[in-house]
Image (cartoon, rainbow, N blue to C red; front, top):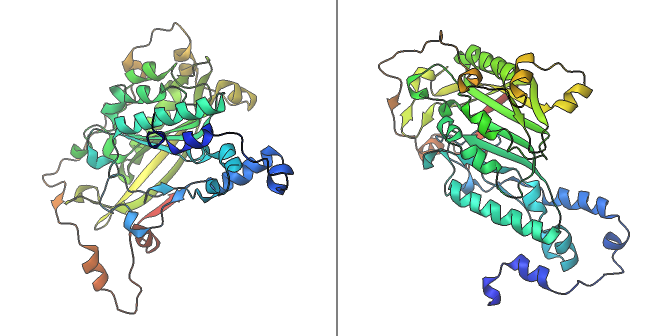
Length: 370
């Protein structure tokens, strides 16, 4: 096979042992554990500061902490083969593995395709496992998903990727991911998919976070969905350990009401602005909760028992008494204002903003927690 058809890291790893560099204090004096911490600090990812790479403001995937693609500085890996062999895989392990499990391409960043990214993930995990000759874990797996994609088994498919061992899994349901959000349908979360996912959660997982996001005016619905989730749901790992939820946290953010060419006036709290309300329900292993003397819902514990027949409706989260807002004009068709014309309207003495990161600093997006 021609060398040009072999990945660069494979060609480097296939070469003979590197120079021992007996005069290097870094490689000869510092323990491997300390070097790992240093290398991890240098290779941790961060949002790409290039303004040309910033996401647009009127998209469904733009939100605090997700304003641009993330990148890693890999100059460290170019210093010598000894360092490369020791930490070539760290950029992959340290970065948050983010996947958008959505039915329409405009709900994910440009160029993202779930099946293509799943294939790349599988290849990377296999390559690292082959080189390390042992199991390894990644820090974080974050999934943004529409409801119907979860129910169709796509989350299960992702979690059963060979060699995938995340420590923390975050599942985010955005305002526009709920069933029939366009019609302001009351919030609901089906439960059939829980039985499929339970048992496929990797044994490495020590925390599952489910972020429930909706409108500020629907906070009572979000709170109730979160309460029912803690009362009913659990997740079983492949090693048999069960994760229950006893804790939750509230946060929120303020963003634009314009998505594409539409401005959703029904959901605005002020002109062009939507306030989002989020409850994050956190699941931890039962053994950890017992050590902390935290009480688990008796219903959730009963449903988690092996052999207990559970119907999907028993795990469904909803309230049949909730109603929706009926309006003839939920949105207006408005072309997105061009940034260039917006910039030209500012005084010439004001530095012209470049990209979404600058607009964040100017208050277009804000994040709060409580």
